[in-house]
Image (cartoon, rainbow, N blue to C red; front, side, top):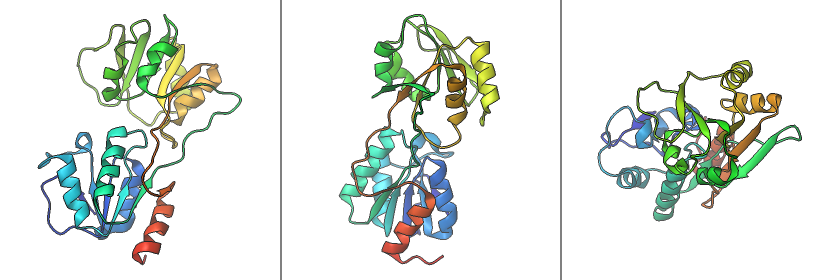
Length: 246
C-alpha cells in the first residue's frame, strides 16, 4: 500500500481508495501493493500537490477501480468521490459501515445537519458535542446552551462559541468512562453524528444508561453507484469486477 499525499504520483496501483475511515485502512492493508490510499487533506502527514480534485482525478485515471471510503459522515469527501467517479470511466463502489440504530431504550432526536441543533436543543442545556472541529462553524447559532466539545488532539486554541469549553481525551473510551464524564460535567444531552461502528458507541450507550437525549446528525445520502457495508463485501465486489485473486 502507498499513501498518496499529492507528491508520489508515479506507479499507481490497480485500486484507488478515497480514505478517511478505519475500513479504508483495512481494505488497503488487504490489497497490499495493489492499493493506493488517498487521504483528505486534514488526515495527511505531509503536504499535498495541487487541488484535491486534480490529484484524486489523476490517481483514479490510472486505476482499475475506485473505492470511496471516507468517514461515513464526511460530506465533502463523499461529494468529491462522487464527482470524480462521475468523471471517470473506472468502476466504483462506496464502502460505508452500517449506521447505528436506536432501540426503545434510546432517546434520539434526528437532525439533518449540525445547524439544526440550535433549533432543537433547549436553552440552558449542557451538551457533550462529538462532531469534530469542522462542525463548530455550523453551530454558531447555538448560543443558548453550554457546550463541552470533545477534541482528541490536545491544543490551546480559544473556544470559538459563546458558551462552553473543549474536553481533551484519548480514544477509545469505555462506557464507564463516558458515564463518569457525563456525570462529572452534568451533561444533559449528547450531540453527535451517526458514524456507526464500535469506536464511538460508548457515548451512545452511556446516554442510554443515564436516560439522556441524543441529538443525532444523520448521515449524508449516498447517491452514486453501489454501496457495500464491509471490507469483505468490498473485496467481493472487486473480485467480481477485477478478478483479483487473494
